[in-house]
Image: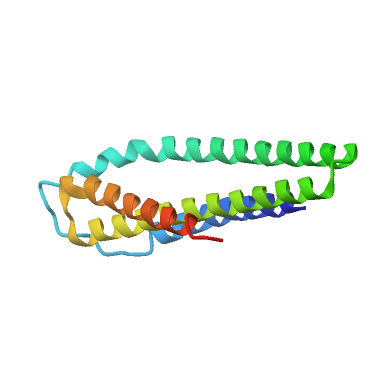
Length: 151
């Protein structure tokens, strides 16, 4: 049951990402002032877009197959008559892991977006990569402190 819920949320995320990405990327009509130092720099990102889309699609497919395989194994354990305590512990660990994984990627994507917004607003040039990496590092530190919180 929980695998079906995460499968639905995964599909929802892919659909919303596909709808919102073009809308948000063309939301602002303002063109930044011409800066000769950054004029050709952002052309580097043009080649990353197809690679990122392919990797995102492959990750979604692998995640779907992994969730289905885990659910199949759980169903087989239930059919074999595994004790209820063991099953409860396994199911709780799986749900907690999925929650933490979702939190981690949400923080990474959110802080990467914040870093890109900062870079777009201030037009840093080559420091852009540093700002993005720093924002991802902050996201991972926040995730670490949240995941280490005593339960």
